Image (cartoon, rainbow, N blue to C red; front, side, top):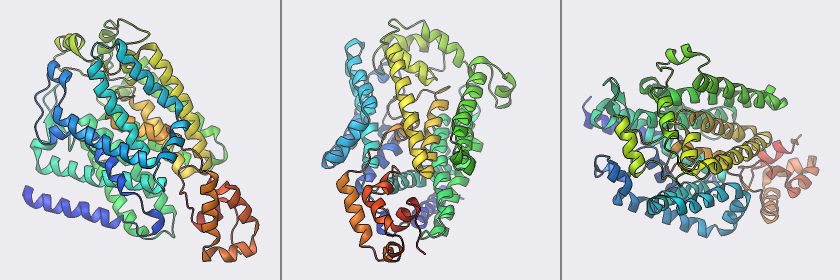
Length: 499
């Protein structure tokens, strides 16, 4: 098929996916501001603005230090637009900031680290981009209907990036393919610039599509159920195909383990015995870390085409530790891979590493033991929060558990923690960000709207006690649920049903 014809076909496919997965009911309508994080995350998951327009120069230590002015302008415009949206949502954003003080304090520590950075101006620019990740997460979660916003956000990014990746790989090899630096073999990059990034977007949107597919399949009364299942099934098939050709073992392994956790968290056994989820997470973390770091089973690494050094990663880790001058404070936020240290690493390794390929070590290099301690606190509080959401709402909670676990495992061999514009970090933020409970005014408003709905009349006549439950806000405790719950959700969560 000629590339021009293929482009038309895939454009129709993308439009068809949006049409199949459309929502017409009022409860699923979201803010138009949702397009801002969609564009931001789409760039983070693919290429920078300059790379899309082929304006960026060949990477060099000086170019890494200076950055791209065009990219900086594009991200600053998106960040400014995002901040304007958050200002208009002042009260809701204030609640979020108070509920997530641990993450905010860590970002404050990152800002303080400018004081001992060798390149404070570069650190500030990168900190601004990292702050943009938080802004985009808040735009999604402070929407009046956060669950619907999260679904729309996942759909809009996946329905563009996944089909375009296949289009580039099959019909535009100069854009979607590359050559491996080790053996010169053909590598598939899709809309990204390397196979690892292609793997991580398959990981993220594969989990999101799986969540939506199972949720839609279980809701037999939902409007447009069949067409939505078709769209989600197409995306899942594309994700599996890209996993098959991408050869990104870190993302594939993370996807398999996170999918197993997601399915287990939705099972009746786990819901009745929450300790099963704790045990499964601990077991998978121990096994995977033992294989990666302790060499417990080298045959497993050989099976997936990796050697005991994890493609020279372990050797790089040893060299990096010799370059640390202040183990307690590090070199400053995103400041390690700059200047003489970057030149040293590029002179030792011809393949020019620009990260530690381990998120925990990367935090240590940039922020020292203080940063590692903060990360441990964030992981502990984030896990408690995710588990609490899962206990209240198994559907959304299972997805957040999968994204949380994904972040922990993915950072074993890749660096994504507090990394600006890192897709795995952005979705880890979605998992650990605490959503404050609805205010008393919002609960009363939802209750009034519920009581005026004609479908509740029969239920309330038969079970008047449901009124008290709604007013007391018991039906609003499932985090990420709509601010204006439907009758069916309230009735099901309050354990009442019409006769």
